[in-house]
Structure formats: C-alpha cells, structure tokens
Image 1 (cartoon, rainbow, N blue to C red):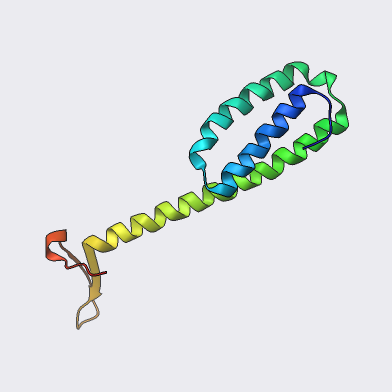
Image 2: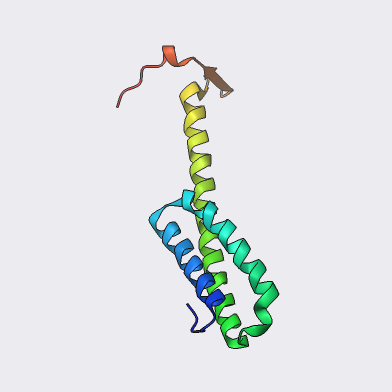
Length: 118
C-alpha cells in the first residue's frame, strides 16, 4: 500500500489488499462486498483526489492494476472450470464413436442405462 497519510488512500489500499487476500484464499464470494466498497471509495477519490499527492495516486494506480490482473486470472480460471464441468456433463449423457465405414455416430442414453463406477 502506498505511503500516504490520507485516510481515503489508506482505505483504498486496505480494500485492495482484501481483494488480493480473497483471490489468494479462493474466497470469490467475498469479492461482491469489496466491489461495492471500492466503488464508494473511488467515487470519494474522484471528489477529493485533488488533495492527494500525485506520487501516492500513481502508486495506488499501480496497486490497482496488479489487483485487476489477479481478478482477470481468477475470471479465466472460473470460466475454464465452467467449460470443464459442461464438457464432463455432456460426456455423461452421450458417447461419440465411429462405425466400420468411418462414419461418426453419437449414442445418447439416460443415466439409468449408464453404470457409473468410482
């Protein structure tokens, strides 16, 4: 967190640190409240930012950009997991195969016809 005596900068830095902790700990549900808090703090910054030292603002911008990169990586991870779950779900209900002539064929079946083993 940048060194600035401004309570607003301290609050923003603390909130960004909490974002990093949530992402690092896998607490994605905690990000919702932090997003609302960050929104309020950035609105206050747009009103009162002229009172804050330019170096402190630059350092805070750098910190925010690092957290944004972490959020982007977490988003990609969640999307990847969703795609994998969808793929596994589709595999459980159908089987794609080829016949003797090399023609593709998809067999669909209900879960009652499929024996599942661990």
